Length: 205
Image (tube, rainbow, N blue to C red; front, side):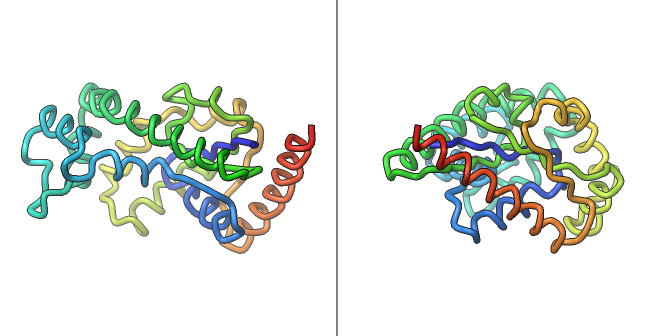
């Protein structure tokens, strides 16, 4: 099975690329989905986050208030690293279990969307890495206009991540996403054809 990771800095279009591939029938798991699973009510993950950050990060319905927690950790790098130290091992274990299930089902290709792939040192777990890139000003615009963040918070999040220039050279494929949704879809499906061909060749060895 060919294991592919999608990565890219925030608001680059990783999820848009992932959505295109899912609609094309690709088995795909996202780090965000796994992060939500890791902190569902009653899980050890949520209990660990609660112990570290206090009851203020729990909503009235008993679930994690992700907006409140994000506001805390992106103001303090030490707290962000503390949260990552709690969640990353849990998310990684869930991802490994998912990948194994795909292999057991006979999938030729499986994809994981991982925003902090390089930061967490996970690239060696995959056969290929696809990096989605967009100019920093465009990503800032998307965070403010589409996601509704205030500019100050958006800049803090952008500045907290590894420079895209450092990631570009470490990826096997780069998808540039500064244009329209149609342009992204054309590029995404062309790359998917290539990846499926590689997966078939790997399967036939």
